[in-house]
Amino acid sequence: MITRIQPGARMSEAVIHGNTVYLAGQVGEPGDDVTTQTRTTLAEIDALLAQAGTDKSKILMATIWLADIADFEAMNAVWDAWVDQANPPARATSEGKLASPEYLVEIIVVAAL
Image (cartoon, rainbow, N blue to C red):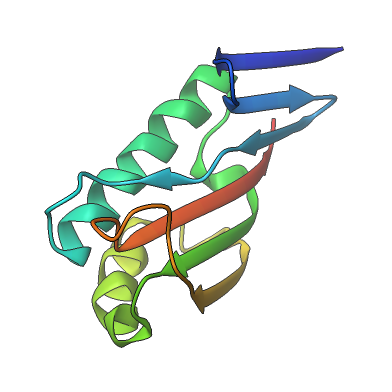
């Protein structure tokens, strides 16, 4: 069985298959700095995981894209305060051109139910 959360014409914000939850890339508000965008992005992740019936302690993998890798430390300061220290996921971070120049960070997670 497949369950789609907030499906749209192009994509769903999250998809549940079996005991795994796949989130679409989440971003903050354009115009905010990387710290604020990261906080907003992580709040969106929390909300979607809750809708799916899970939480950040069950994140298996996180992929983080930064528009500018120079923002790595600022993003990590927010991430480190948010992540479940007892259950940190596997994680990768890379620099890449995002969908819009106003976006500074995008985070994709896969979690267990």
